[in-house]
Image 1: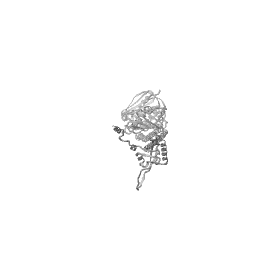
Image 2: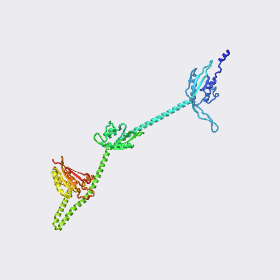
Image 3: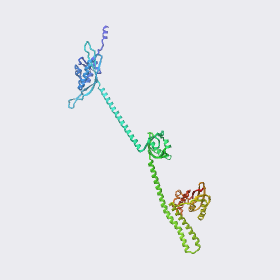
Image 4: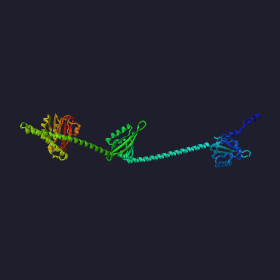
Length: 552
């Protein structure tokens, strides 16, 4: 039984310290008090690429002498200090040591061994004093830890950080340069806008708000602190006659996603009208929604006024040229007409005169004198018209104004013209001749009425002619209405021009010089009156209205 207890007190397996030392995961050395290596585990030998025979019995100060002298001296000084000062239960860590470890030896191309270049490796050492026994000096344990990977990771991290810092600094530098260039471009852009008097603007379709530069407000005649909106632009600023045109131009361009350009007028507070040219384009989102409209404004008043002036000059020149061409053609026609009109009565007079001289038949006398008298009067009227036209052109025609009863004067003319009208099969009606006094030159007003009535007879192949005089407050109106050939719109516009004659196509030539209505208008103008022609169209007759100031 006692033996059994004795056996139980003894461990079945004794602890093998040497085996445990060999199996330690860290590299260890055991030194004696003279700093000589007693033991080195397999981990240490593997790290250093050595065998136990290479290091056992040697001083720790003599092994692993790698690297430059200053590195070896730094390791030696720390080892001496640490080994002398280490105490039981205490441990000392070394700073990080750098070892220029020799490279592995490989077979060369010629069969000789060759070494790879030395590679730096980093180590830290921990010195611990083991307990002494029986008055002997204690042994020292050195734990050797390789921190090369940690150093490499740290250096790589530092390099990465430095690289990132460099990239960040580069990005910041580039951003600063970009900002400086942007500011410079903006300043140049603003300077260019100010120099060219261009105003920039941007309209938000959702709110109708318009953001614009100071020059844009100046162009629109607004104060610098004024607020501009789409409603105000179209409702107050743009000229009423240009609003629809501006809106339509913008809408068409935006619908086609094109830029637009249009000029319009604005009224400044000073009452001045200015011309503004606006250019713009719409910006759209991916889904096609209009996000904004932006563009420029430019005051083009001087250019537009010059353009309008040149356009008016060109139009005036065109009108003058057309008028001159018409006058030339009319003059040619006039010369032909005068030649014919003068030749006809002169030929009649000369023929009947010759007949009277050759024939003694008394029966021809009355007829001859009638023909000669009628043609002589016709010649007299033509000569009078020619003389009067010359006086009007030279400004020498004058009138002597006296109170005249226009109704009575028109009645006399009607009676003088009645036989001529009836001889042509026309009915002359003069029942509505109200007595009304005007301030006029009696002979010239007779000329006016006679020309209007004779003109109605001339251009009326059949039907009636109505002559009327009616007072209308401040003026008296004389009207001559016929059922003759009538006039179209183009003829009405030129009816009072000199040398103009109008008749229906196919009606043949109408006698006359083309001066009658032109003389009438000028004579009416000299009396401070007005004359107007009206017609419903060709074949529907015409009416001429003369208005003269009533005499008070």
